[in-house]
Image 1 (cartoon, one colour):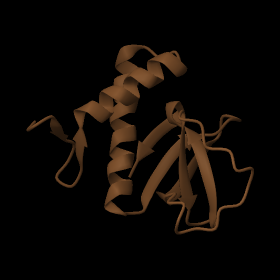
Image 2: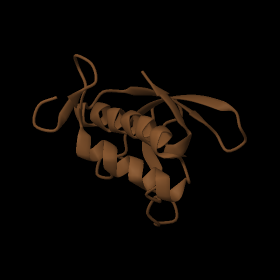
Image 3: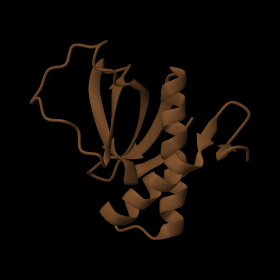
Image 4: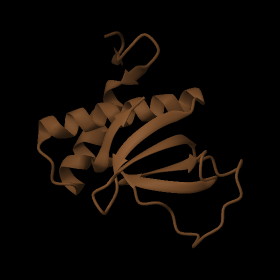
Length: 117
């Protein structure tokens, strides 16, 4: 650890402040215990680091009906894609991404994230 940055692997560095902020939000919103929320916080911070690098992240999460979904995600930058829809912002408990297979915006709940590859 150096200057508050934790090395997750050789390619991904995660800021400890981001991990703690995500974990605290999960404890409050998803009613998770602290250790599970910290693990989810690391996964979310790793996803955001992959988004910041501009790489396509392979994300696995649990859908609302209980099935597992694997998505190839890019960060949803509003200036690069045509946005249509309700005009409402995405809730802070969700991650908004551009699905490269479906060619559409998608989102999932941060508490349901399983893995990032």
